Length: 112
Image (cartoon, rainbow, N blue to C red; front, side, top):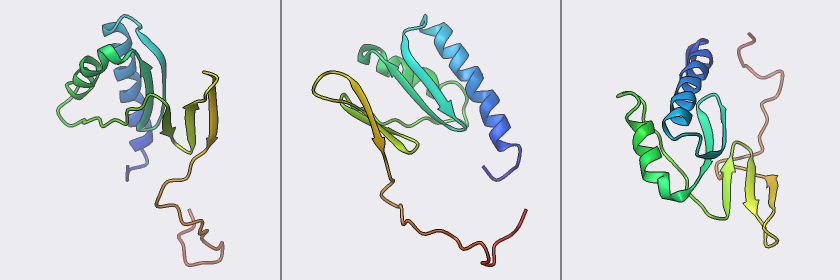
């Protein structure tokens, strides 16, 4: 994601992938969302292998990975989980590499 155009190109490609996926699987997705090159798909587990194969066959240079769970999934900086009552709840998520360090505004960082 080094080029300034990377986010725009990623958005366009992911839009195309989501559109074709939705058409191919006849709108069997319960929920689909994305942020740049990160996406969250919720669908019936019976079509998981078909969806994963479809996504990874979309283009030779694109490879998708996944996290699969019946109870909790992390997306960006939130954890989405199903609690005991069967409702969906959210909580803040920090990656294991999170250090809580902030770069001081006067440090030797490039100013754009």
